Length: 132
Ligand code: CO
View 1 (cartoon, rainbow, N blue to C red):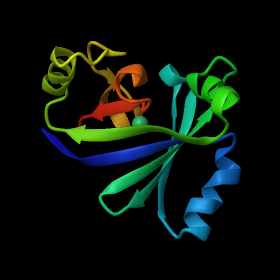
View 2 (cartoon, rainbow, N blue to C red):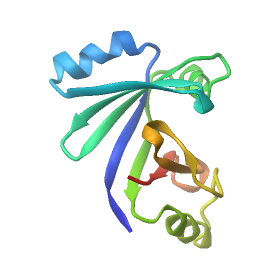
View 3 (cartoon, protein in one colour):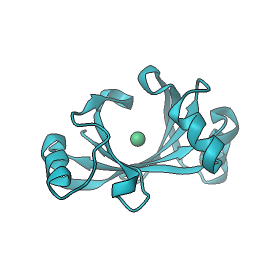
């Protein structure tokens, strides 16, 4: 079951320059930064009620986030749904014709299990499923 929009991922060139926008100009509570080496990104998390905002800064030129920014500029990168059953959600999506980027969940930011659905199958929206 999908429980909520867990977070919205936003691609930025610089966390240092972007954190003040969310923390000071919007007044969201800053939670933490974390580097996810497997994804070649540094992340910063903010609290927005039950949902979080995840800023993503590339740490290498071949980072998927670097490629995204090169193509689209900064902006919304993905939407993440929190679920109590990531494997079940993956097979539900797959059996309904959605192309999966990850057949099996992997470990992402915050030690959560995550898996992505292909944006070509989801109306152009890169969609993440994540556990708690
Ligand atoms: Co995410």
